[in-house]
Length: 324
Length: 77
Image (tube, rainbow over all chains, first blue to last red; front, side):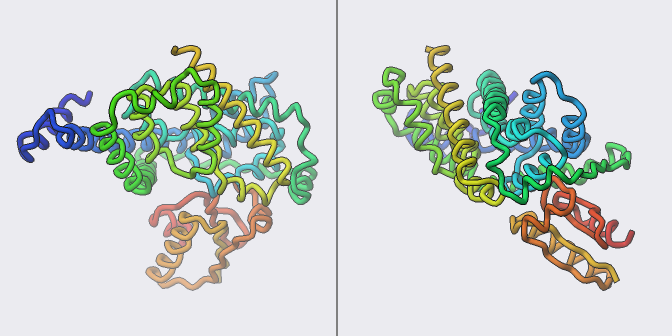
């Protein structure tokens, strides 16, 4: 799909700029041009498709669906998948949480949604697709959905409702009015807003993409093979937990992170360790924790983060076993 | 006169929404009271799932960042 782009970037770097193909700088520059343009195309494409899906399946409708269907445990999986389909904005996580609680959705199911929503989002998917290809992207998406499903189910077993802030608990006693927008608008009318939103997403992460790819490209050219592998290979059992713990305080977005992680993998760090790191960076952020403080006690936030951390670590181990 | 409330905790999207509402009001020469609601408990008194949301005369008319065109439709409706 992107062969033409490879030709253009090679022509640009080697012919136009006159850099040597076997030089570090030449290799790094060629990577940079190729990756940047490819990622931007994918970002725009995926944001647009997700926006279109969301235009027909707004979160209000997903909530109504979850409210009406209690599917013998499948509702956790459904909520997790819905979370993946919904574009994530950290400032919306609190309204979403409350809105679900008000809508009568059980706490565990709400958590499933809330965990997967930032984990599997349009930016992460575009970056993975661009840097790792289809297979790894699918693995990432499926495991993100699994982490949400399993963590939500486990959280529901703990009966954590009393740990919500008091004013939130009271919401359960007030029935919510679930109003759905009934306006049926043709696809043509929706295109401008979908395009605008996709463009807004791309513009918002553009700088991080360029910086991330620049760092990745520089590392590709300069860091020797097996450099990281010496320190972070699959032999040390603590590599996965360490990667996850290091990732929690990092509030980098997927856009800046994936190109760097791609270099880690290329230089020999196991995929499971890298995926766990990535998930912890996007899924567990301290700013989100501070937002959630308004709706739940610190204890609940601790349990919530702890459990998600554990799920991510287990998943990292699992993938390292699977791919070693 | 309409009372317009912008519900949002202060994220960039919420600020953009407020700016768009004010721009459109100025452009169309409409008068309205615009109020920004930032307290989460007050916000969640309305049945919304995403911020920003626009409330006109106590009715939730939109949630998410609206296009300028959409704001015009909402304010002239």
